[in-house]
Length: 153
Image (cartoon, rainbow, N blue to C red; front, side, top):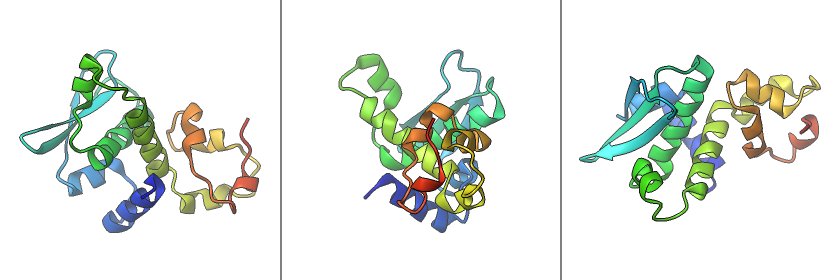
């Protein structure tokens, strides 16, 4: 199943695209801690899923990191990404790209793009409005209906 479809089902099931509310409804514990240079990570301890977020980042970054880590909890519930980073057993590039895609699709769902359809702003600018790093806006899967309405600069 495509990530976009997974996200759409999740939004429909939970009635929101707020990553904090979805995490709460899915019984994923979310902790804010000073993490230095780490933005966040997902882990599970004794089958209890937990997201750790850096408490020292701006609200938009905090929200995107929560969406990204929620992506790990949904797409990769049995992977311990901090362990993988430390031990490099296999490349986590695919795993991280999937979590980024999940975060982008969650925070910028198609139905919310409707209000920008004829505004002439770029997809990068829309991403910024939703707290998504502009360089990740390319991960947004636009259906053919939406593609001519946004420009990638």
